[in-house]
Length: 461
Image 1 (cartoon, one colour):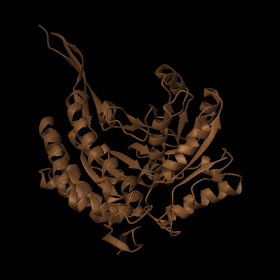
Image 2 (cartoon, rainbow, N blue to C red):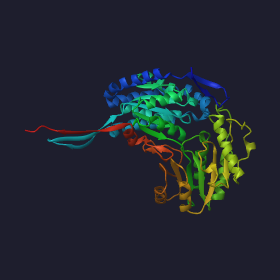
Image 3 (spheres, rainbow, N blue to C red):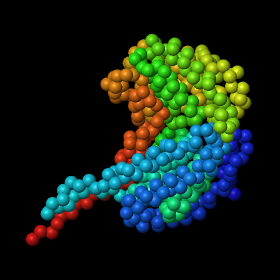
Image 4 (cartoon, one colour):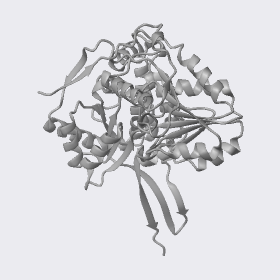
């Protein structure tokens, strides 16, 4: 029997394990979901919305269980209280727009014709969720999918193996039927086999670029709809009129919070030459204030990375950049807890350029590179010089200037004077190797449903 294991970054030991479900049992679970979907979709929309929100509320009641589990599974310090703020914000917002997002588009309603476009649920939605923000990334699809009348099969990464179990338990205890929302423990081969067999009507995957390619290969020829949120190398650009202190505070937090393990975390920063020296000095001071340590200690502000192999990637990128002329500005003596394993000190690099892997490949750790630029044109060219495109953070007092630059950026979201935030009213989407599709907002509901047209000619005398 194949076991799926979570190795805790806290102590390197097995924290939780579950047996992988055999393919035949997984097929049965999907069949139960498909059987339950029609009756679930026939329930009134407001009833489905209320049940989903009841599930959200029930999960909030499990805070004392969920928060320390997250620390053990992926290393986020308990002082930050889990993911409930974003989890609740996203759930409540999609609930508030569900009726408008799903209402028919009426073209004609006359004594001769009824012509309209309705939104119909896909059927069974498969959500493959990542470990870095396992509750928030999952709810982005789970909440609107269930509200729209789909049934949902949830599979979480092994690093956060208990999250799907907790979510489903909360929702079922709140009244969502057990066959409507299920958590399955699946290995890669079984997952691929289910996808290839057209088991699902829509698949949402959040994870690595290679993981996304694997999903596409498994789904090839099935015509199954896919939503893919993959890698990122998100830039920030600090212009000469920026609020310097606000830029440092937000961009450094965006680069290092959650040990830098965020899809839309800031990984490279371009600063106008007039502010460059001051920005670098203030950034080094800001990052140096972290307390690296055991995430279960309420005094810890920076926990370990989720796995020592993730930390190894960051260390290798930093070492490669330094060997090519980059300068590391954070004194390692400030972080004696850095053990060469999962516990990794944050770092700020200067004298970097785009010949270095550190400035081109996803780092996904608490390290950021800062480059000096002379103009908007130079900054725009550098920001676009990436295989990824999720978000870009622009710092200026001029909204018109930010919008103008933003239109030239190859990215899914343009921020001005903020970063590393997912607004549930806006579509969360990306370009290039960051993926395809979009979640949340009205468009997120549209991606989780399909249009059905009604052209009704009335009988006339």
